[in-house]
Image (cartoon, rainbow, N blue to C red):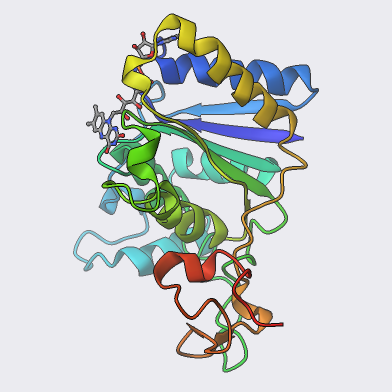
Length: 265
Ligand code: FAD
């Protein structure tokens, strides 16, 4: 397999850096090819601005969606963005690795998504009609590839459970797993999350590293999260609401889109 690991931590000697090295070593030991985008080390520019679109006239109003579409179609996106798109097309599997900061990904990684997931590449793909709402949510440019998150969190695992004060980790990660990765087509694997890491002593590292090695060994075989496909008939077009007969009637929010367990029949 070809694996792209996008790493978003400012310190290579961090726990995140050590886990990244564990992941890479195990993947290579399994015969996989690995490329890394180390966003801080590479000085990744995270803000979308006019400089991203050389075709945009100085006096033209800047409309990011339109500029992205034109730039992707005309192949005039900046070199750093084009290099990341090339890596995404090369890789069978994408891993995003980051520390949880304010219940989300660090800004530099969000900026990588904002700039690299261009119109025509990651969104705005496919036919829009009364039958289809584009190629997205399980379909799209990156369909057939796998993706997963490696996340470290300072909080306790209990605080991220169904009734935990932080909210369920699956909900916090839903906008990334479903909204960023599943949207352009990836099959999204359950995330690898390490909790309470700020108090992880050296002795705690070994067991965590072993669990991560296991996830790397099973990257090709781990079943993805069973998100519903947009164009599979589960949703009404154009409201894109889940059909009333589907899903556990007591369920609401993200869980409705994540499992077929509550479907009748
Ligand atoms: P490090 O700080 O590098 O290390 C963590 C511990 O691992 C240290 O004790 C270190 O000694 C130990 N360690 C063990 N083995 C090794 C090894 N081989 N190499 C390196 N270190 C090792 N947490 C939440 O849960 N929710 C939040 O919303 C949240 N928001 C945050 C916002 C900000 C701005 C910041 C700075 C932190 C936030 N945190 C939050 C905490 C954050 O998630 C953790 O600090 C982070 O995940 C720790 O990962 P790290 O790689 O930076 O670890």
